[in-house]
Image 1: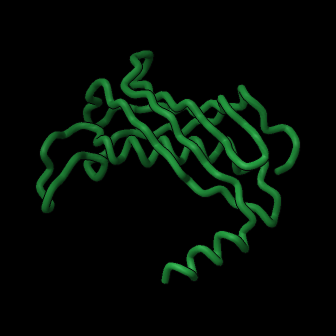
Image 2 (image 1 turned 90 degrees about the vertical axis):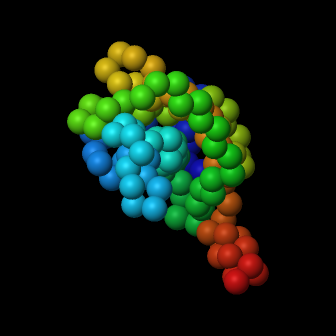
Image 3 (image 1 turned 180 degrees about the vertical axis):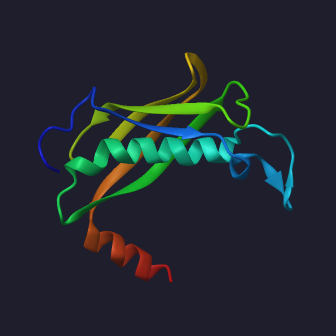
Length: 130
């Protein structure tokens, strides 16, 4: 990993909630609000943005944990800002605290963990499980 990734580094993702981000089962939208699975995706993306600038050519991050507490609904059309902050960093792992906001209101929080591995190791793991 390149130098510079340390506790306190942040990155964010901003999205406007659309119909395709609503919870739907068998093609039927249940609620016209931001789904937890869309939220989880954006939390993963924000945490990835913390790591990506510091990866070396031979390395890659592999998500190993995500916890999400979804606290409040956000209707279609509202903007959500997801902020990831590095709270634990070592040679093999990045831990991020992730928070999501609808304006100033906290709508979710959680933790995302990525393990750093050589790209070749990840390729070997995938091949072994084919």
